[in-house]
Picture 1 (cartoon, rainbow, N blue to C red):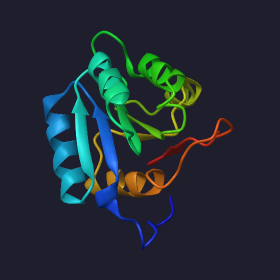
Picture 2: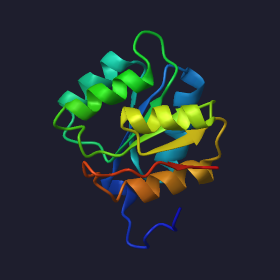
Picture 3: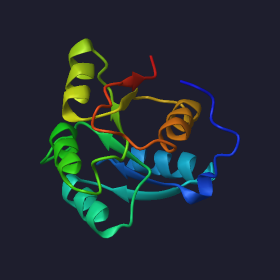
Length: 146
């Protein structure tokens, strides 16, 4: 992952974090907002879709895989079908990092994944990288923190 561009204005960027864990949401909020990004949380797929529909736009979506109801893979597919979700980078958050898991993230439409537990530095490297990009339909790269 490359270093963030020096001109990156994090204050103009909004991150959506989708995770059913209060502890992960608290951690994400603390890291992301202290770095200067705006942060919106959603605890499940329905809330995430409501935020995507109602919000102007997100610069990056952080997406847990294991959630009650709809999992992150299915939610990623729904996001990609929505006009506001076609080009936003999606970074999966997961405890799993096998080759099968990576393939599932990619086939679902994800652009990167971060293995839990993660450090603030790793999270911010991904956010700085992906928040400056709009994903085209040809985007095939799946980055990880490994």
